[in-house]
Length: 205
Image 1 (cartoon, one colour):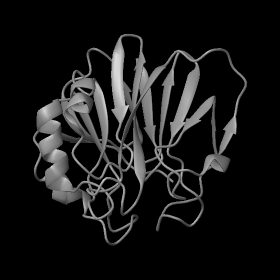
Image 2: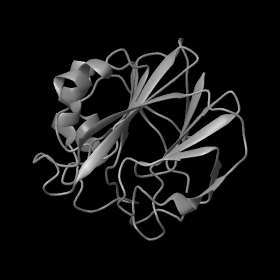
Image 3: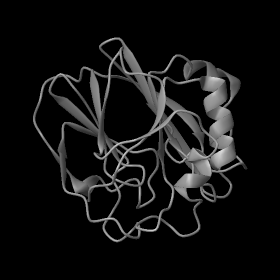
């Protein structure tokens, strides 16, 4: 199984067979309500270089052998104008143990046809849902309908406790979705037996 841990905003850890990847660590005081990160991992991936996604200094790198993850990078845009507003964005597709998961970064537009094909048959999808800087709740819902991932993991939204005020609230997305589950933890295990769901994890600080 792949263990996914949500650290707030768009920052996740993906762990498999003793190896850990961190995706999109944010810098101190960049996201309202979120505590500074202090993570350890074998590798860091950043979808783009904005300070709330590309703060590699938050992660202490551990020695380790070769990665068990096959990582495919899909180049996309941070906005709907081919990067004219906010630049490029990278989508990461991770494969390990016969499982496929994807992190969409700060995706701000609908992926191209070839990218949509590459994002089919996912066991889990980490998707921004807050709008303004990325796709919004309705666009995220529509993309999930096209891709039909087994587990949908919303990120990059706002609540009463944390997040940029300009972003849509989490509920704007969850109200559009079926089979929403709420976890008391910030971790979910993705296995072949994990049931289909939109899984909301809890930020633990």
